[in-house]
Image 1 (cartoon, rainbow, N blue to C red):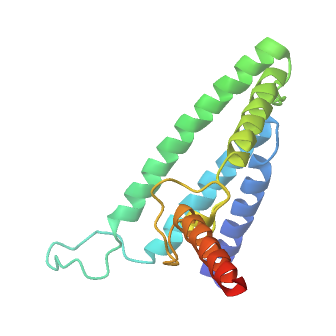
Image 2: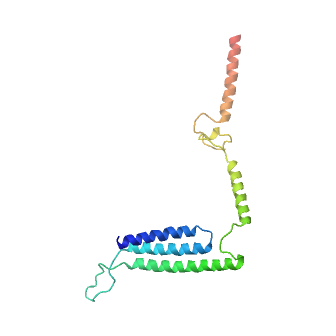
Image 3: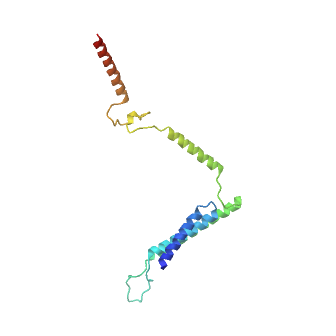
Length: 179
């Protein structure tokens, strides 16, 4: 096994365990998961940077050929600072949670659940009042005014008027035929 393969394997383990820990309800586990995920990202950046020589020269050959790129190193340094800041924030949240409720796990708030259920019921009620429209806009149960008539058979009022006149016309012809 080569060194990059071992680092890829370690990165995968860090990502998997970090995501697993972040899915827990305990803030301490979320903190540990975030730290592992941050370290996995740092390994990812190191692996994508590739290998190179340090930017040291003998003073005569000043070419940059073969030197490692400093951008991934700057990105890793930035990622370390961001991870440190979020870690400090999560530690403050854990401390505050412990001081207030003597627990570091998040519990569902009943008032928040009630608001969420009410919003869901309201959204379902609004969704049920939507028009049951077909592809032919004027033939829906509740047609939308100004809908384009896609089947070119006229509006329902025009069809009803046409049926009434054809019925009268057919009745008239039958009466004439009877005479």
